[in-house]
Image (cartoon, rainbow over all chains, first blue to last red; front, side, top):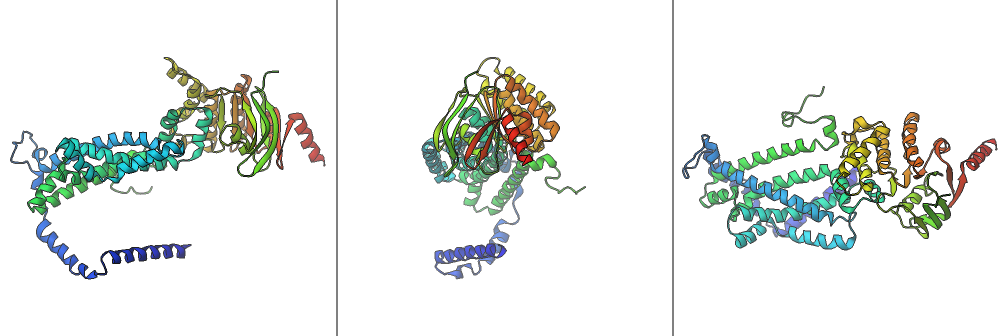
Length: 287
Length: 227
């Protein structure tokens, strides 16, 4: 069994290498000096990060006592978080509606297939393309960002959700069907609570994903921290870009810790030992 | 005698191949029927067919119960919502029988708590089901059916994993349903439980269902021992 696993991994790696070789037409010379280029670019252009992005902007005048609240980093990040929050909530609710109509164990095939096609269509456009479309239709600003992310979230979460629903144990569904519960009641009272652990995990992942992608859609004018990153890139201020990227990284880690805490309320491990804020970071000692 | 609530006519059940063929029986309100037979012979398939989850291979059956909540079903793996609380699970039973009205929340809650108290798990009402032991989970599944008050209750080995005192608690609760006219069909592995609680036995042997009164079954069992 162990050797078979190694053999499968070896074959997959060989296939990947062979495909890559085809893609670059065997020109491995391109990699020569690549690492050196990266280290030169990093040390000369990005390092040290310029933390002035966390200081108050010169214009407009800061009215807060705490300078940080008037900084590019805070204002951009908060706008990105707000866009991601609204889009994730709206997208999650929309995705629940569509995924309940796409799961084959919940609805007949003739309903599931068209809904799946619709979700695939929504998902096949990346959030960046959605953002460009909404910037054209609505104009620059956070509303375009919210709509772009909401549409993408529906497609992305919808797929994750209907696959989760299809993977659930059948016995609770069978019992509730035999009892005569309505479809909506089964969804609200059986399917969603039974899959709450996965749904929460997906919700938090999507929020994190949307925060990260807020940087990308901001570049096309859909609001958030990406707008500032795009501006600094244009003016070759890479050390400020690096500082903002570190800020995004910190926010993503915080969301991950938050996700762990939230999910501990609905999983078996949480029943045994619910993490505290401290031991989310430091592993507690075994008693 | 009251009208039958379930009539099986020349029914054959199974998936691709028939497991039990040519079943002709009737079930009346207030009866407790134990289905006995070796593993894999088709006991579960039979009650899944009656509950409408599996299509009959041939023949037919007539179920004269209300569409919404008239049938209670406890599958082998209990069919509980593990991440929801005990009270939520039990209230699902009450939900099927109590229609929309101003008092529906109160009625559901009353019926839920009544069932939980009868099964001795009222103190666990706010705990997630996943934290309970196997025996306690069986009591939750029974409480759900109790809150539902179905006309026909189908249960697949729901007394398994329970010790003697718990079997009595569960069956006392089921008895209250039976006294109100509910018929019970249960798959059983333990002959002892069948003899204690059932009024009729469906003994499955090869691909045939034998419909026996408890007396006939007892005579046959004792006769078998003497042989």
